[in-house]
Image (cartoon, rainbow, N blue to C red):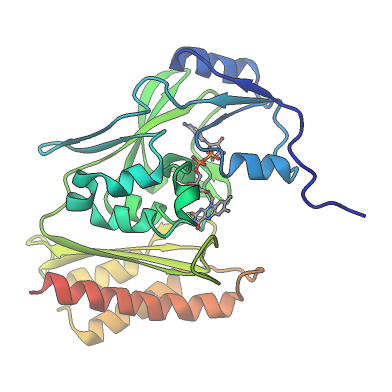
Length: 297
Ligand SMILES: Cc1cc2nc3c(=O)[nH]c(=O)nc-3n(C[C@H](O)[C@H](O)[C@H](O)COP(=O)(O)OP(=O)(O)OC[C@H]3O[C@@H](n4cnc5c(N)ncnc54)[C@H](O)[C@@H]3O)c2cc1C
């Protein structure tokens, strides 16, 4: 009988002493080696036979990957190896980036979040990644150590398709940084799943809002949609409506409708495309209404 979970194949665990060594190893073993952090995507994909690398290169502990820092003038830096539970429990994250903490807490179970990282969630480039919306709404930028030196990769242009991102062979993400968020702001992540634990989202709607004198309406609303297109994306038409028109129940409804028009969902084991579309509209309207009640007061 066919066994869908045949067990991990034989592989070699590689623990480099530096980022240079790790990157050089990945380049020298192109197609045969993969970097990993918590391994919660990696080991499952390898067990199920989708990924067949011979070498797994452990990034945890390499320079800068294990620190989380907050500078009131510059913002937040989260080392790539920091597990989600540490992110969401960090006092500076809870105080200044509460939407990110809330998004982390929707991922699977507490046990999984002791291993899983935000950077792994992003690099996996699943359209359903639960922390991606908050990272995009807060303007997250990845720091990448690669064969050509260190560079910054904004999340806005990072995702190229399901499982595809802007990284090249030898690239290692060492951290994600966020600018100081607008004060005050209000955020909401609405995850629709088949159950409350350990399931990927059917639809994920992230909304972040704040007062903004530069916007005609006086407010900026960021809306990021997940699980409803090949990549997570900002619903720009919805954002524009709420930047230009007075924020009312009517314009919120119009923005939610525009969000629904922007999606390109698929039918899969978790949901039909049609259900996804309607739930984008409903959850976007709900999330916008909730944050609006908070930012307008
Ligand atoms: C039971 C279960 C439930 C889950 N539930 C959820 C859920 O509810 N929501 C959700 O969003 N996800 C869920 N996931 C998926 C997974 O846990 C997350 O995507 C997690 O954040 C991945 O982080 P990681 O550190 O474990 O990544 P890893 O598995 O270590 O890596 C993931 C990918 O990123 C690449 N990568 C890792 N580190 C780097 C680096 N430094 N530089 C470049 N590339 C790198 C790897 O090569 C791999 O392609 C679940 C997984 C399991 C097993």
